[in-house]
Length: 256
Image 1 (cartoon, one colour):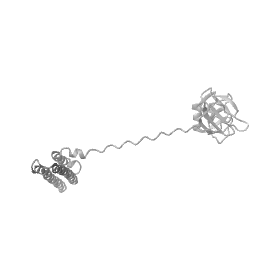
Image 2 (tube, helix red, strand yellow; image 1 turned 180 degrees about the vertical axis):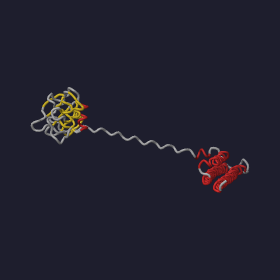
Image 3 (cartoon, rainbow, N blue to C red; image 1 turned 45 degrees about the vertical axis):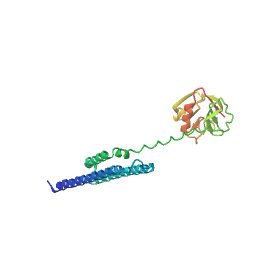
Image 4 (cartoon, rainbow, N blue to C red; image 1 turned 90 degrees about the vertical axis):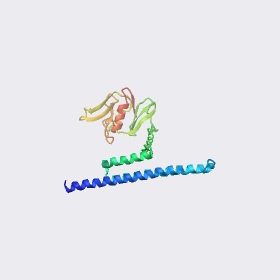
């Protein structure tokens, strides 16, 4: 056996010996604490004619002594666990810690379970209050009729969706036809919808989410709202998606 191995074995033996000595101390202390209440109960407090006030006082003192005894046993158990962990940490000291707990449970049934009950789980946080949908905007809708599902205000540079005369989306910014390519005013109807559209006339320019509302190729579609078009209504991406999804073939579009 090498010197290092001998040292380790000798150290472990010393550690176990210290833990066993601590356990012996615990047994002696526990026996003393257990004996104390019995001695107190065995005292002769006189005849049955003692007043009820004296009897009540005795009961209170015994109850207090019992609490103090259990507190002392618990504190001693914790101290012994700490000593065992110091010399035999982890699984190495598991057997001795279990022996200490067995002694505590023998003298004070239920004490360990009572004082090691896990803390109740915290109450779940209240659910956040639902965010109310923004109320439809109230604004001047110009000459757009109640029957229209989409309205385009060329002079105001805005467009919106409505149903039954109530605004459901918008108004949102847009751009329309440049001079010479003006967007036609008046009442129109949705003709067709093409999600991944391109312009076959103007160099295959992309026209995503096209919602055509004339038979001359004018549509709502995604585009740069800072640039004028060849007659179509340019909308920002999310606005174009919303118009595309909400409008159906046959819906009225009014441009003024």
